[in-house]
Length: 441
Image (cartoon, rainbow, N blue to C red; front, side, top):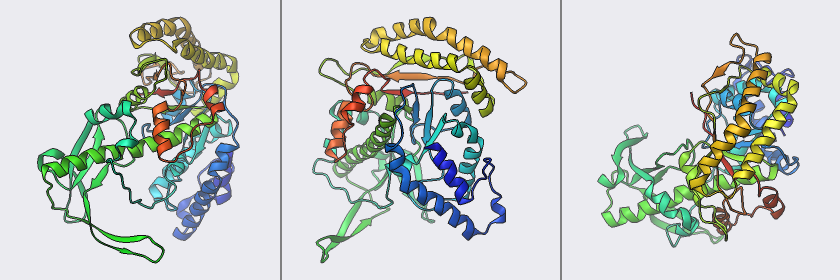
């Protein structure tokens, strides 16, 4: 899948065969647009086949959430000491056929920097955001219960208890300004939905209270209506409370759809869904239940916040994993085995067992990997101990649907989404369901 992305970039004339970025300043605006359009169109046409035709990965691998993980070079390099392969979102492709020049340059810089990692199969790139939102059209949504039925029962109260609503106003230039006031104070007709202790940098968050001034029935049976938004309007308390409740459900509905889509891709390819949001980590585990277990809270599985390994370049990763492939494979397998040993532990005993396994099974191998890194590192610090990396992983225990929590699957079925194939579910029964992955400086 990754080679295909590079081949398309080369064929479209955006990078060279060696991975260097072409000089865009020598091209006209039309030529740049044509080359980018060729690449985006080709990626969109092959997106589903790339997923369906890819082999299932048996090793511990990761798929970074497009919205709750901000992908950086440091995260990619450090994570490739833990995961066999990583899937990230294509930085050039989204749901539209256009791309800003600044975003194009950043995307090409990532491809050029990671060229060898991609060719080696360590870093895999998919247009995940396009698979999440294949259209720019804004749907007209209607719900008799304020979208209550779209939210799994076990996470409903948690979501609403952690929702933060703030007012939004439009200025004279048509810009939407987020105010530092509780939306319940003035009850304005525009609000922003966020959640406490969350990390979510894209997706649906702005909502407008609109009314319909009139409608016209078309010849094909559809309705043509004119929505009206009073930017200076103020709602009465009852109307605002009903609307606020609905917007929280809508915001979470949109988010669950993205999580479901990306988790489905992860399951199909044998990868673990990665989030950096503590809020998301907790509601995922709250939603995971089975007939034999109760919902469990997210608990820390692996912590190496204070000392891990500093990786200076993609070449160091390639040298390390080529020269010491057996050590890496053993480390990767150990993490999987530790995950399996932790399955079924109650949350009050989980931390104690996790710390014990970390010291016995994992710490010695971290020291070994650090020594290997020092022997191949290319910078003056020789890959020494660094505190730039913290890795936290959270798994939920006991659920027979280990990748997407069972209740989220139920909710998505109500939205006409397909369930995971049983063969994929079974292969994932002993894998981490998702990982809360935190990398901090």
